[in-house]
Length: 76
Image 1: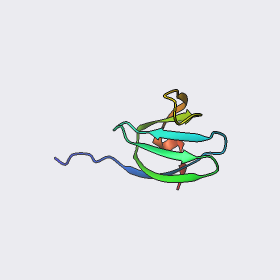
Image 2: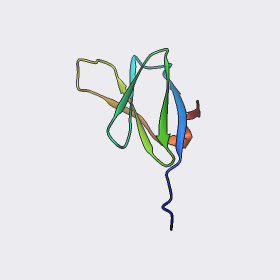
Image 3: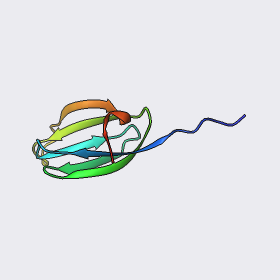
Image 4: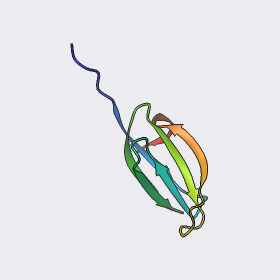
C-alpha cells in the first residue's frame, strides 16, 4: 500500500500595512516580508501559517495578526 503524500502549494503574501511581517510555518522557519513587498513560498496543504507583525525589529514584541491554512493565501 502506498503512503499518501502531502500536496505542496505555491502561495504568495503581500504586506501592504505593517513595517515588517513574519510568516511563521509549522516547522519553525520564518519568512520576513517588508512593507510594500510580496514573497512567494511553498507550503503544504493543511499547514497552518501564522502572520506576525513586527513594529520594532530591535524589540521582542510581536503581534499575531492571523493564523490561516496554506490554502487561504493567494496562489502564486
